[in-house]
Length: 494
Image (tube, rainbow, N blue to C red; front, top):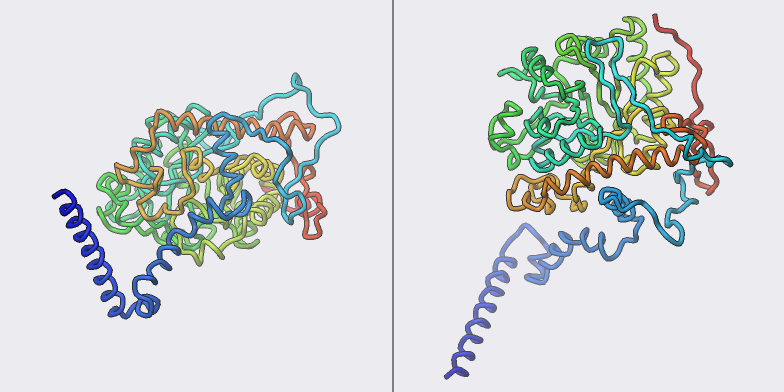
């Protein structure tokens, strides 16, 4: 009896399996959309399966430690170790190719700084002398703009608490100020995007009342007018409808469940003078430092900006410029723009610094660098170029547990960082992850100073271009101050 029953079950399973195969066979043969499936029914589906999961197979089985894009396994593992406070120590030599074009080398001093002669990088003021409440920034490394909406509630909470513990600031991104940015007690930089999310009135225009309301929060230390970002220069922010929850819609001031698409530029800023007018207006309304964030496409923007500031006076200058590289970012973006628009940070940052030096504005305008600066070596290069601070988004995402699944825009992030699915968010435990955020920031600052000490300097803010060498195509290196010479000051502001 049992044997007959087992045979019957087996027959039913076989028939069900055959019915499924027949269904997909007929469906594939009759459809007209995919040639492969029409010519090779059922078997052709493996092609799409391999295409879908191919990047994951390459990531874990086929690519070596330093091949993957946008961040290779070696870099991600390094960030994970810093976030877990396990140190960045390796054995048996580095796998970093010192002969590859673009490799970074630092000029070690024959007599490094002794332990007792070291001291940490000092804080730096932003907006001092030009606003009522200047911002004293304590950390060189800070959390770059990631909107609540683009990243999840527990991600924002972890970043806020971690930033407070490490003493760095957190940029809100263009999605507005949420309660989760404030609950950790960290310093907050409020970003004003092209859609004016969080500071807009019912018609989408900039609201002075909202500006003053947000400025009333003591932890909001500065405002950042975003012109563009490295992920999508010339294109506004994109938040898919699946991520526009009622809470996010209320914070941004937009409809629920609809794609949130920002204009590709500020409607009320069409030239340099209007940009500087906006900087001065926001500073007047808030009493706090105001800067701009932009990717760089060439010389014209910075030259025109500096000329306008000299003509109008130092009070009209932005208190800082956040320079983003065209290497992309944490936000969703059209591939055509992410791949091909804007200069990389390696080319864009020196151009910004040089323009400020030439016009005599370097001491007036602080410079924040961003663009895949997730390691201490890359951050040290930016400081040597002349940056005052370094922002990173994806470095902190890795500290939260991001595995580079490349699904940030689909609301299916497996680690809970960029999804609003409660089941997936469950994997991101705030009480655990905020410590990793803080560890990553502290250890980045620590390693920056370590590099500086090895160069014979007291702290990382003393790094200059002569302390860095860049490997060229022939495998030999050239000093950064030869590759990007310091310009002479040719203009003097009033």
